[in-house]
Image (cartoon, rainbow, N blue to C red):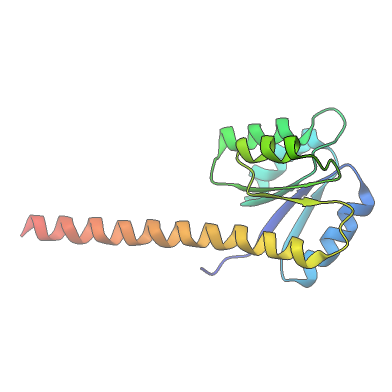
Length: 147
């Protein structure tokens, strides 16, 4: 699929926002950085981003709450948790709420992050391809049924 790859990154740490934006931009991904979780949903819908990197431990609204809100509105948005809270419980809760995966901070290998983002976009591509094939098959079946 040909579209601009845009990631919304939500983290209260400005240094992490800068580092991730630099790494993903080098990788050919547009990054919209948001430091206030309360602004994340409006930015998500304003930008049309289909992939979100989301910190868990943030003030005012934690990432797990924000993940649930994102998935409630649009379950097709791919969310990757990016957190320093390394525990099996946190990972399992993230996955049960619909996260695609988890990248742990401090990020020492940006290759893992870019691989996670690539996999999220590949999943979106597969979904669009399946949808287009279904539409083509449905249209073809309707034409055959009409003759």
